[in-house]
Image 1 (tube, one colour):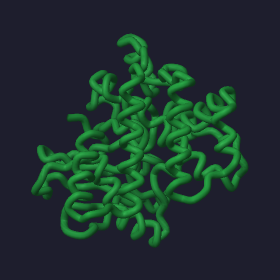
Image 2 (cartoon, rainbow, N blue to C red):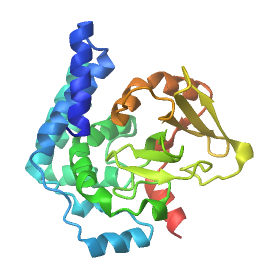
Image 3 (cartoon, one colour):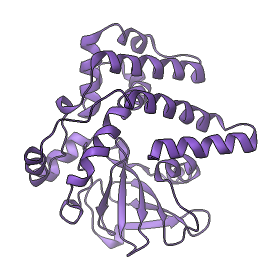
Image 4 (cartoon, one colour):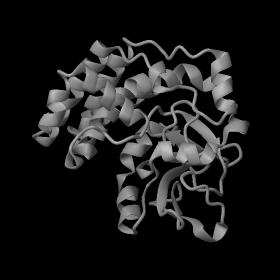
Length: 283
């Protein structure tokens, strides 16, 4: 059972037991259904071993936008279904996003801009929801790549603050049971990769005086914070966990930690422009 199917199973059990899910979890459950159905119809990125090794050696992620099997008809369907779902839950979606469906050229331009963390071609006030829609619509393509390409990554050699498969920023982390080593979880493709315990994945800060963490409810959860760039990253200590953990589910059920961190003035690691960070780290 893959991670998406496992999360769907857990959410279905909760819904059956409680009679309903919170609106946020209900939305995520419906998005997972779309993701699994779209993912079953796409092919993994056609990146050969030699090209993958060369990119990783240069400090670049394995896939580029043109490597995605972003078949226009499948991507259009993914966008249509995600937009319809967002409209159902929020009541309205900007007209510019609705018009996007009938513009193949703009679909590709928007998807590329989101993937490369460039300015989206939408009015400023609509960029936030546009980014969420594009994230959800493209996630099946990205997790499909991660499923087949993750084994190409040498975990001991990468240890960078961005995903070795797609270049995404982490939105969750965990300390493994074996050594307490810290691993990051990609916000875009769900790739897991090894990282330093004492380093900010956004700005590279290693000064122990400006790096810290606070704990959430119980001893399982932590929120790592950096005083230099004011970013935060949620984490779970698997050494303290009593049951098996589904990391993609953990990011959904720890929103209280987001509220706490943001109330203290910190912002998510995903708020950082990935393209800018890649250029700074490589050069």
